[in-house]
Length: 135
Image 1 (cartoon, rainbow, N blue to C red):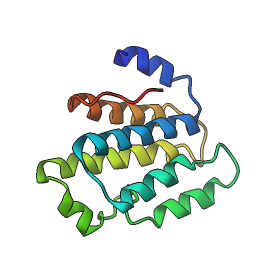
Image 2 (cartoon, one colour; image 1 turned 135 degrees about the horizontal axis):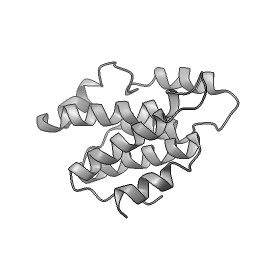
Image 3 (cartoon, rainbow, N blue to C red; image 1 turned 30 degrees about the horizontal axis):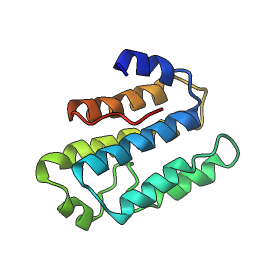
């Protein structure tokens, strides 16, 4: 699927579905780059539990407490040591983008920012010639 077609399809998704797709992008990237760590699994599990509505504040607080949380905190040292040096910055960027999908509009009116962060995640995969996950 071409990126333009994908962007059009993504633009029709709910915030929760965008978060799910972004989480798939992170998982796909990690699988392709053979990056494995418990903190990644915990982050992805948290992201896919993004509620459509309800207790978003609690969900956000729980995410901030994760060892890998995509909010500017240092990643666990053993995770950083397991990632090739040339991929650390890109991995951190991808994690930050994927996390922002679910929280950027959390306390305000809906915007196009979640879609923009998904587009950034898609770009990282595309730049690395990693097949995009199915919608």
